[in-house]
Image 1 (cartoon, rainbow, N blue to C red):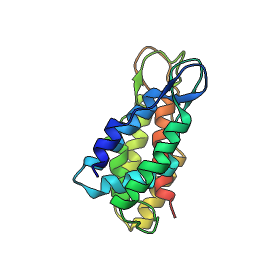
Image 2 (cartoon, helix red, strand yellow):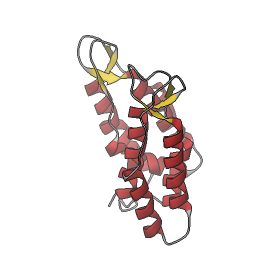
Image 3 (cartoon, helix red, strand yellow):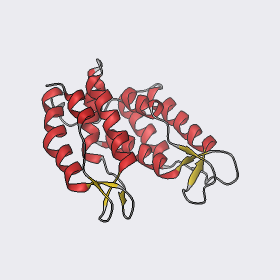
Image 4 (tube, rainbow, N blue to C red):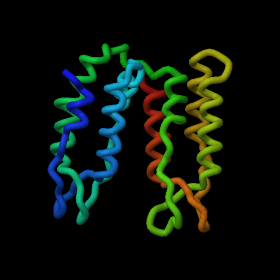
Length: 188
């Protein structure tokens, strides 16, 4: 079974007048999932498997979204079992600190201007928090110390709301990115 092809070929029914999942979020996740499934590095699929239970998509109304039941069924009935087959269970333990640091640096939140319709954080505050967390996760000390330090930095992050004309990071993307890494670091 070519999991990357199954993910890439997956299509969902668009809905407009009932609640659905945000199309952009679902498509971005599927792109990431297909890349992880196709990656020669088995850690990518392992991270995806660990991350899957914490994936949540924003609901949309009165704009195009994907049928929620179809998306949930695909994740639960197709993707989760395929990942379980592809990646043996590692005891559901937390992910390695280096993998968490890689997740923080590999993805960048969406950029936008003018935070009138979409709340934004300043790029500087997000980049500084990310750099601090990566340093903590990859620095000295044992794995437990680095994990606690990384969690502490992400939990206590002081992200500055964006004001002005320069670009800022979309608040929801930043919060989801940090929450995803925190959830993976806390897995027991």
